[in-house]
Length: 183
Image (cartoon, rainbow, N blue to C red):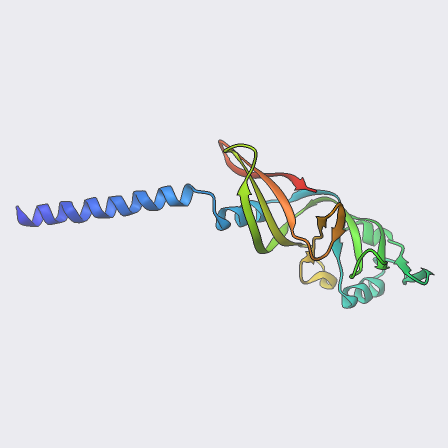
């Protein structure tokens, strides 16, 4: 009888640990936020991603855009080609502009994202929404873009390469989903 009471006590402790783990895993945390942002493509409309100088050179050589052209002393851009628009890049690539410290281009369409870091999480307007600030990159399958292209956040109404992106997430019966980016 002592053995079965011990076995029962161990079983109860194990069940309590499992149930506690289940409750904790259903709570919203960084892992849930990361998974939600990285699962499936996220629709981006007119958002901006930055390039490195090496990516600009590679894209020029691959004919994703024309060679950069200096339009004025403080503005250099490169016109997108059909190959470049196939990546869902929109508008010309801005190489040098006083409003940005890095070359950038607009993107339009559904893209897979990679979370580099989560900088803040807070409750939304109700219990089924969250706001998540994160540094993220847009994944594009091409040799020129082996690393995800950093997505610019918005600070004081302007795109800023140093600002995190703010995601509005909502919970429904199937789980957490990204609703939109908040500006």
